[in-house]
Every structure is written in C-alpha cells, then in structure tokens.
Amino acid sequence: MNAAGPLIGVLALQGDVREHMRSLEAAGARAVSVRSVETLSQVDALVIPGGESTTMSKLAILDGFLEPLREARSAGMPMYGSCAGLIMLADRVTDARPDQETVGGIDVTVRRNAFGRQVDSFEADIDMPSIGPDPFRAVFIRAPRVDEVGPEVEVLARVGDDGTIVAVRQGRLMATAFHPELTGDHRIHQAFVNLVSQSQG
Ligand code: GLN
Image 1 (cartoon, rainbow, N blue to C red):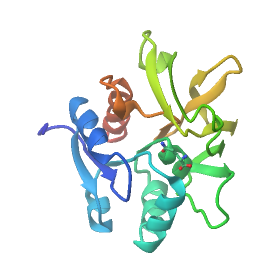
Image 2 (spheres, protein in one colour):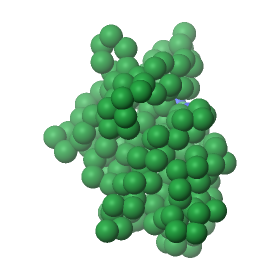
Image 3 (cartoon, rainbow, N blue to C red):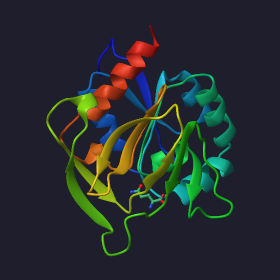
Image 4 (tube, helix red, strand yellow):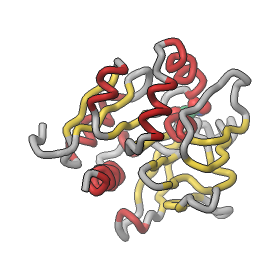
C-alpha cells in the first residue's frame, strides 16, 4: 500500500482483477477491488479489466452497477479499460450482442473479437510514444479493435501494417485493446495513475 497514492478501484464483476491491482500498486496507487456500488463511490478512479464484455454487461445490469458506473463517468471519474474494458468504455460496439450495454464515454466504434479466430491470441511490440520511447509488449486475447474515432479521441497506439488502433484516450478515459496487466511493464498503469493524480489537481 502506498499511503499517499490515489485510491483506484478495479471493477470486480469479472476478469483479471488481481493483476491490475498489483500493477496499480507498482505504479504508486492504492488499489481496491470494487464489488459494490458503495465501494465505487469511495474510489478516485476505476479500472475495468478484461474478460467477456457480454458477461460483464449482464452482471453490471443484474448487480445494479450500470447506471452508477455511467454516473461516475459523467461526473468525471477517471477510468481505464483493458480489452473487454475498452468495449465497456466505447460509445459504439460492432458485433455486440443485441442486449449488450456499455458505460460509454469514449467516442469510438470498437469491433469485438476483431482479429479473427485463427489469431485468437498474439503478442506484439507496439510503439506508444506517450509512455516513452521503448516499445510495449502488448498481449492480445480475443481482442477488440478500434474502427472509428471521434474528434476528441487521441490515438495512443496502433498495431500491424494497416495501423489498427489499439489504444486511445479521451479526457480522463483511457483504454487499450490489449492486457498490460499480464506483463511486468507497468508504464500504462503508471500513465493512468498520473492521469488520476493530475485530475485531482
Ligand atoms: N472478446 C472479449 C469480449 O468481447 C474480450 C476479450 C478480453 O477481454 N480478453 O468481451
């Protein structure tokens, strides 16, 4: 625990919660898993982990989380989503289930499972100038991709010859199509912790 760092929750409806908590702590934050709306109201910021966005949507509705999440985001809570978390923060989703809901907030269209069945999972070294000059080893697992970005969206990273967008930021919201919590490289969590600290003034 870092006594002075911001308190960042990791939404624990589903997904790799513990790995995110470890990375956040390595980046100087205090981390807590968020299993209740009450805990959500106590954190400075939120990470939405990877998992399965259809299941996450269903659980968010069942557990009464969807509206509180949307309200927290509208009120300016910084949020970072990885993989399914990117889908949860997207305003528009292609290949979503008909009843699938998102928290929204990032003006992008994302496509679920966009890299095809043959390449269910892969790793790639990507350039991400906002976190430093060294490439970031990105782990993609049934990952979405960003197909369209609105004018307020900053593209943070691309992958492949076609320049597929895989990391974005809009204001206090950040998202990656890949899983930085699975590597020992904490620079993306560090960037989010910095964003949270800056938003606290
Ligand atoms: N394919 C998943 C979805 O659509 C995302 C995969 C992941 O988070 N690793 O939600």
